Image (cartoon, rainbow, N blue to C red; front, top):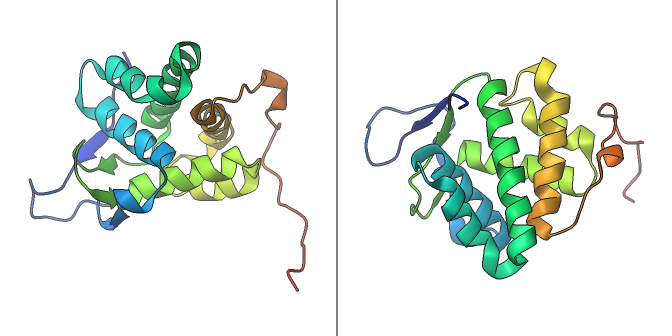
Length: 170
């Protein structure tokens, strides 16, 4: 089993842990993002996390897609555990706060889900070693698509993050 290099800080310790600062509320993010944050928290805390993750995904995705979601979560979380530059902070499973590290991971998944590997890599670089960025973004793409129930084939992963073209907004 992969060692989980994660920490907990919220209402248990008075000292500040890097990445644990609340930056929002769970109610401010989409139900899909709430599901991911709960899965992240559960993965770090509960021995039977796969059952919990499956039960969260099943109502929205159905059995086959929920199983795929569990596998994608496991791959993403395992990748995070071995790639993180420091322990990842998170809040309790039922905490209404959204922590800084949790928000960064949501941003990584958002960018990966819209095909913005550069944006996903930039966000991921805040938490992940440089030599592990590409595999981490690959796992983020898989999870992002699994979150929405869309299949991603292996050849859809880009070889490396590319900076998007400079596009004027006005």
